[in-house]
Length: 197
Ligand code: HEC
Image (spheres, helix red, strand yellow):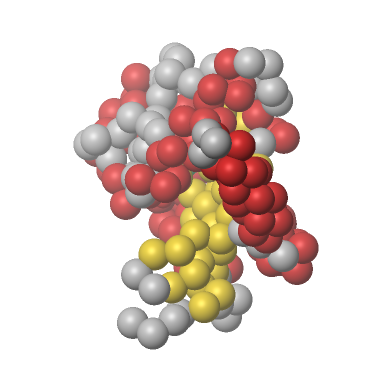
């Protein structure tokens, strides 16, 4: 008798066993809900700080505010929540916001989905990742480039402003975006099982 039918039966059973496991690895509804809530808080605070600064001080003043406030707001939202909350991009302005390998993969997958016609605002990834004996919930949500963002991230940035950007961020890659492009992502992490390390 050929071993093939046995092999395929075993494979089918393995796939059946794997399916619920991978669904579980997307994280619980509670984790996803909390992540969405933290993003709303973080995005709201960033927008308020940026909007107020753009109105009262114009782009060059707002640049300074972004430079100081953006990392402070991320730290504030992270602190006390037990989560790590931040932003990253395939073309970062702040090198401290450069992606890790996991974030890079997810953003590249998002880019492929955008190329197939999916909307930037709909792209979300939630997954429990294992490594170093720990389990970490990772939540990533795409950030579309809006009209207001073009001043500092667009294709034509005022030369004076551009100079100020480069003075603060000599390795800036975050210009040349068009409205509607994925500017980057919100990236959240929560260790859900520190394991035995
Ligand atoms: C006044 C100029 C200015 C405007 C307007 C602006 N940004 Fe930024 N953006 C910055 C600066 C400065 C940083 C770097 C902040 C830091 O040091 O963490 C930044 C960083 C970011 C980052 C983090 C990743 C990275 O590249 O360092 C994202 C994502 C981002 N901006 C998206 C946006 C979006 C979306 C908008 C429109 C809603 C926007 N920005 C509008 C100046 C601006």
